[in-house]
Length: 248
Image 1: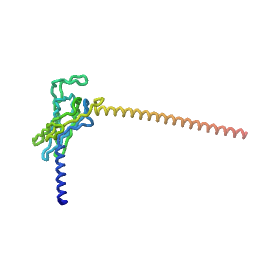
Image 2: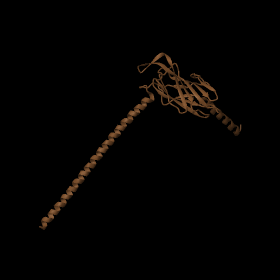
Image 3: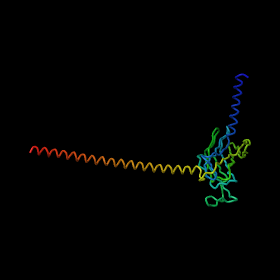
Image 4: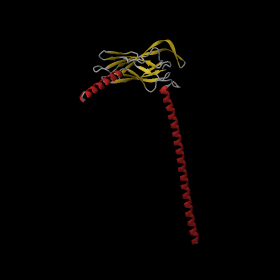
């Protein structure tokens, strides 16, 4: 096999790898911002890529897992998109922070309202979720993507551990081990805020001390200056008097 044939074969193989990797990753996914700890709260991005060359995505529906109902689901506004949140009654009420929760969010839908996801583009839709389940390692969010040519893609196939990735896999949120405070990134941010406040107090105290020291030094210098002037004046007066006595 000559060099040109080897090069051609390599190019075909590389193109095939890129196509397969693109197909594997070009689907709706759920990615946490920071950590999604069991029993805590998290902010996640529903990432929606456009897989079509001749159509735009105009609607995204995300179904929350019924086996792990969440008492708090809040979408962040996204410019150019209208969002609706559907709730349903729970068969078994949840107890969250001492309160009985009788309904939970079952679906969040984003519909284009001046915006769209064009070919070769993607859009992220942030959601605040919690409390996350303590007895699960992951959560499956089944999604439905609708294009402006009426095509509908259902990302609802649940992945099987150890098996091949489905053709239309459902988004999966991996959960990490529970933290001590069950507040995830929010607690970290609060701690950082407390540290920042403490640092500000320290800087303020240091600045105040420096300012007091500077004021004290300045006052001392002024006093010494005045004393020096008085001493000098006294010396001049003494000299004048002494001269007059000698002349007399």
